[in-house]
Length: 350
Image 1 (spheres, rainbow, N blue to C red):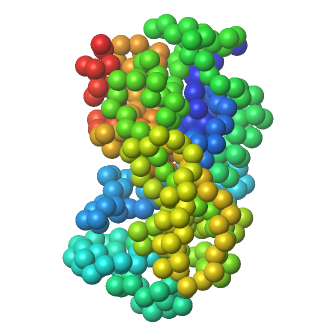
Image 2: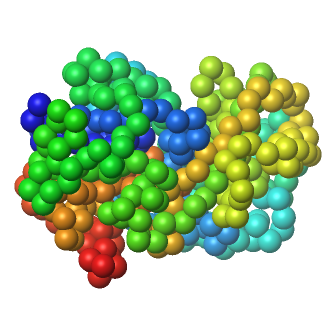
């Protein structure tokens, strides 16, 4: 079998890249065997335009967010599936300092506003030092999207459900040979597995673990995402995703008792409503020291490419950079210089 592109991984990056390449008329095979600890499987699916204690705009969000929403809406039509909806964040300030930080930014940042019905939210939560609304924010039904696109790949005979073994892959400058597949190029969208990829392991990856609880909160509306140190995010099946941790030093990818107890205590102090913990999930994110994605072809071996390193921003970054990589592969158009993996030419040429 001869194809254009072999894609390794079907998280949010592999999904968006395979979708874009197929729309461009290219032939692809995606190799993926699902793992419970993949970042895409346990992510909340939130696109938030501001970040950090200083409440600053996320990098390139003015471009990334509208592009992502348009892409998800196209997928909604193609898959006959509800994928994306606006779901603004209500940020409850836990300290006077946080209230001041938001107050300082209110007049400068159009994504921030004070809700007119602030006191209404205190029927569900204990009073805080004010509430700021972040608008717009978006919620992606990530698991539904990944599963539905996986079904489409099966229907198109574009999916190989197995663990990819790089030792059984012949990578040559002009072609890739894997089993009975001959491809022009191989693109690695394999998340944290890519940390050990011999072609890209020198990139400045940073291991980051995230944990979240899945809870039933029957009387809490699903109209917003609620935040106070932790996020309460409408999830699937009427449940809420609650988290997340950002752990840089860890010895296991398994959920931990310490996290569960800490978050349960936070909920009891913040939430007035009864809740029941239904599940506890954990995963490892493909973060990196630069906080910019890795996009493009290897500087020495042009048949090898990458779309990875999205960290916690996969839902906003992946649609745009999958499109950029597709346009580069098909037509040679430039990739954003702060994302292009060519910026690591020196270390990848070793």
